[in-house]
Image (cartoon, rainbow, N blue to C red; front, side, top):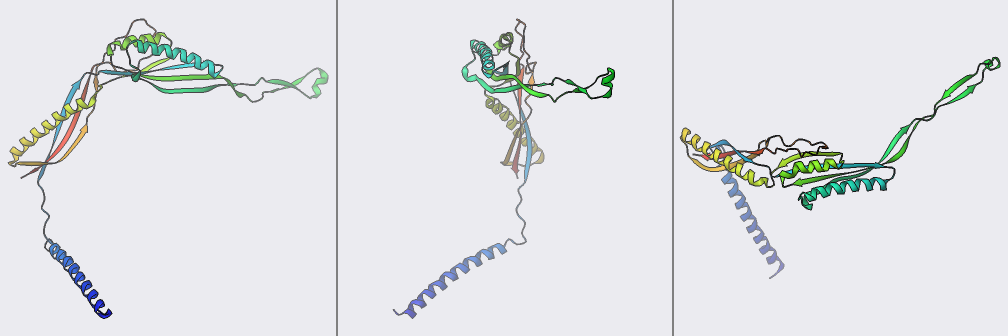
Length: 274
């Protein structure tokens, strides 16, 4: 086979492939022309909202305490802070709190400065009145300066309690040790997802009932769910718990009401109807 025949065959195959490609493109264009001027089929839908509540008793209390000590040197300040912190932690552990539920939030070492004014002095001024027994003087006060007076060491620790009946006793014990601040008391549920699941199920059931009632009133049938949206509502506490607790010096353990917790879930469900 000579070169001319090879070129002719290659050209023939290229022509065939090109013709097939053009045919496919033309077919797609012809199909698309069939939709020109036609409306897109719309889907008839209705949307309903549902709300579900789940009430639970908090089973976890969380609070924090801070130990702050000052001394001339860092070492002395650390020693004092560590001794007081260890006593407070012993109280916590003796109450049955596990080590995994105790966490250091911060540990800080800061220098302490004190602004000191310089001592003023008087300078005798030259004057002709000196010869007659009168002396003039000028008061001179140099600028003051900040002087390092010591160091402050502070450690903040967060405690999670699972036995709420011991909360008051722990606060009293820690306060008697001279801990400067016991605060941030709050109550929560250890497994909130279970409570949310209960509230969600009630919200979905509420929305379904509303959809069925609405469909009957409209004279339509529910086909399928086309969309679902969920949002969490407020989760208030009912009771007197949750306030900050200052250092307690009284030997009487305070009563800490925990109240109850309400979890609200809101859902929006869209149904296709016909």
